[in-house]
Image 1 (cartoon, rainbow, N blue to C red):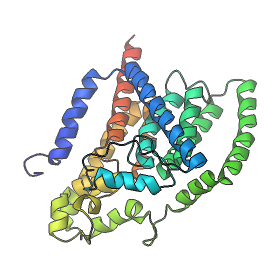
Image 2 (cartoon, rainbow, N blue to C red):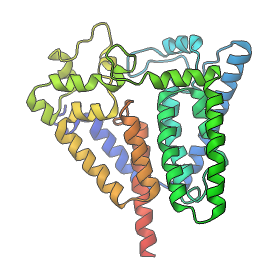
Image 3 (spheres, helix red, strand yellow):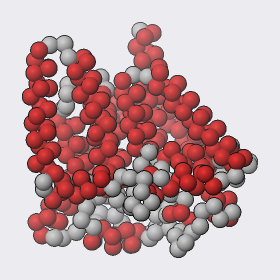
Length: 326
């Protein structure tokens, strides 16, 4: 299909959808709906965790119909939810909810309404929900966003009060984090972050390192221009070994671009993101940094988080241009 449609059918459909959404995107309305949906998801998550810790009852909130793009039935997902120590609200797994929440957290911390404050109430609710999820994606996202936020707050601090508040918050935050990691929930989060390693025997190797080894086994021509998933399997560059084809083709965001579009495609994507970053607002830049960090450990290529981040970046760029004209 990639021969007839540049980038493949999935990329073509993604581009058409993105182009349409760019025309109709309204940042304020989007944020309002985004907040509402997140409140519902967070409420369900809290209820799930309450029943899990108080009564040992699991409450899966996904409908038991159909199957995922990885060829796994939803009933199998529910069976996993029933024995999993973590809840995931209406999502198939905690990582999915974390990736849904992180763009909203970025908006709360760095758009015009939140940039002058260290935190607002809604950002604290999102952070608490991410900690409750115990997701590696969520922890990485929080780390990246809060590091940038603190640095930005220090650089932009214009009075003694703001700096004093920051100096007061840092030791409190460190004490809270230390206390959190000593709890059952916190220790589980710490274990998951320590799993992020390039060791082939580690659980995280599939997400972090495997794709680069697959890329290294591809023919030179395909390393430049990319290779479809079907060809990867047909040429036995990827062996199924009991996995479904979708599972076998699971790579993180950066690896997906590198494998499916080649080094040339990766260069063009980086050129696109760099051009938006250079002319973008703070929200635009931080969104792209957060997205790149998550793309190093999770599958983000042509995903909903990729659409949201690009829409945020483009909309903020348009807003900046309009503000300059006025």
